[in-house]
Image 1: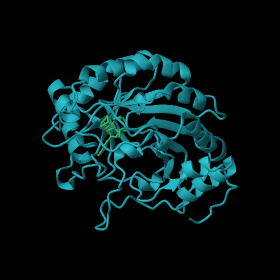
Image 2: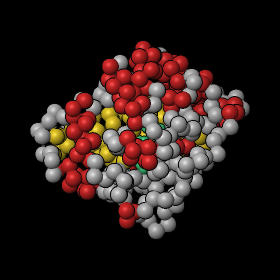
Image 3: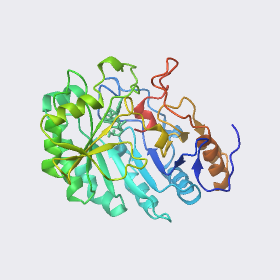
Length: 337
Ligand code: SAM
Ligand code: SF4
């Protein structure tokens, strides 16, 4: 891999995009089996020694924050709440200087119990995934009867001050695509901020089909039947969600239209997998091994240099529309969504 400059202290690519938002996957395992993400039987999980230890995660995040200009750290997975050391990792990252903003993407199971400790440790806010409000549908969609736990997790997060609490929803045709207005009403009633995510070709089963995907236009059309949506005047920056004011605001709703309205030109993300690989894009087909370097004794400067080199070669776009597009070998649950 080409060596990148080590002196500029940022993660910059050939197109001038600077990555300040780090997504860290804490585990590839999960206690749900969402059909658009994992097969019913689960996946061949990473073995213990392959996973970064808590101290290794904190070290790499420290390198990103202290040497590479990362200002946002988002923990994800798999399901990050099932990582035993989560609270300690959050606490260690919150004590870094400059302190990054820290958030968590979770399915919400167990969040009710963990939210106060996470808040005390320094977690700023959460994104909770919730695709349906109907118990039978939830059970079909996630293959587990856990809707009540997710709703309790949302309430627990809000009570603990992990705000704004955001909800991520993926709509699937013929499964829950009639629920967009109900999900928005639910979010408005509880003070949560809802964002719909277009389904992406990142499932382990390779079942994604563009022709059946529920698009941003369809979602906005459905919401428009019941709500008055106006473009949000707030600056979008590198945020993946395009947002709208609902009925004049201040409540908002967002759509992450990765497939039909790609935002790659403004992407400010870098990713670290649970086994210590840097990915410069969700859809990257190549990774850069920091775990090996770290365990071989690399110092912080060397780790930073390798991370910069990995980001330097980020592609201009995800290329989902190219005939040559290849779905990454790693599924979403092992990359960290
Ligand atoms: N388990 C946690 C959760 O569900 O929030 C964190 C990991 S999950 C991979 C992160 C997000 O990715 C979730 O909001 C989930 O709905 C979304 N996701 C998973 N597979 C997806 C796919 N194929 N297309 C779009 N979003 C997906
Ligand atoms: Fe688990 Fe999240 Fe994937 Fe659902 S989307 S199976 S909760 S990792």
